[in-house]
Image (cartoon, rainbow, N blue to C red; front, side, top):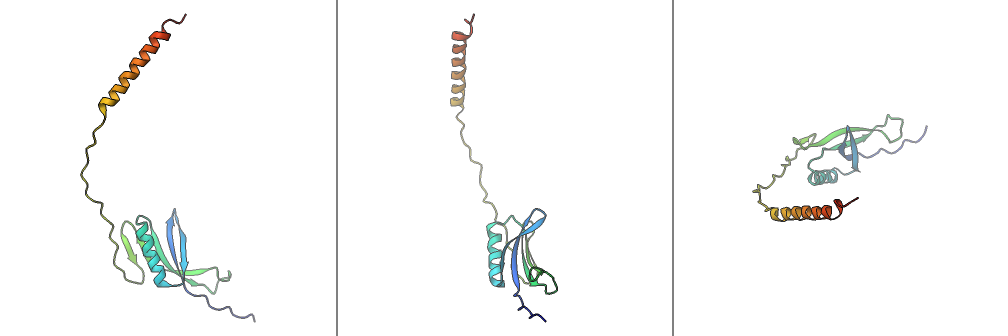
Length: 135
């Protein structure tokens, strides 16, 4: 009988939604560090969907350590805020945009009108000089 391989540790993966699937960004073995990285990623990109999952090795798989059973720990939905799987954590509140008054910016209308008038005059002079006398 072949020797039994050592058990694989539980891993934690941070995933980001991409299209209709999820892209794994990081995989680690420490839950506290994974939660800290998850919070940082949510803080850096609060408009994206993120999830933190626990990966347990599936010993019944034929792929020798390449197949895992997963459990949802945290899910961040930017429209609803974070939802909890197993642990409790305060909800992150989206930042409010500062209330700004609209600033009036003067347009250089006289300058634009002057440029257009000079251009029309130059075009008229060129047309009168070389455009009418062509045989």
